[in-house]
Length: 252
Image 1 (cartoon, rainbow, N blue to C red):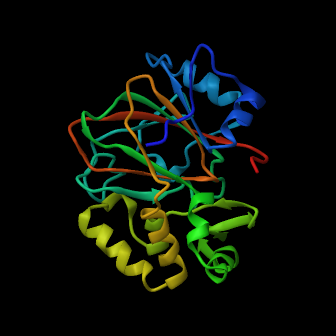
Image 2: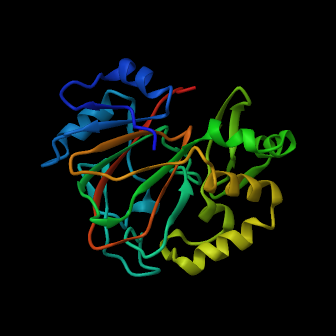
């Protein structure tokens, strides 16, 4: 497994220097971030862009300090986001169906899972070479519609420097709160109805460039949400991450 680019919290760059370091790989691991409260992760996030308030669709999460939401177990199917499941969390980017999709995602580990639950990620530039030019053109051209009147294609920008926005739960028209092994089968079946999307979905899931990562307490993974698709493997036990969304004018 390729080693993640990383830095210690006390020595990591901020602002434009951090963004420059983030750009080549699309992610950066910041170690030993103070996690007793949210001040350190918010301070880091503010140097990278505008903080985004979690939208109403995510209000079933516990929101802290206005911008930090807890990703943890505790909900029942149909009653809110389920962050602890016995199934994988499919590869996606955050906020696919929202008016303001985040450009950067920060994930701070407070209590990592002890068994399973590894994070997986793959860079869009590693996926597209496995697709035909016709498939890629379709991903740029076809737009998905979401209320209120949001239209978004999976790929934007240009073929030399593509940006990605993708969530298979949204594309398959299912409630992400109800994810399970059975729903993963449903996603596979639904996406097969659109061959171009299915080829993209399978290329992401089977990419030889995919990397895996296990959090330690105090690890903060900073992700370029327009370049990196991320997923999470099944796990048992408890788990608590804190997530912050950031918007930039441009990361391309």
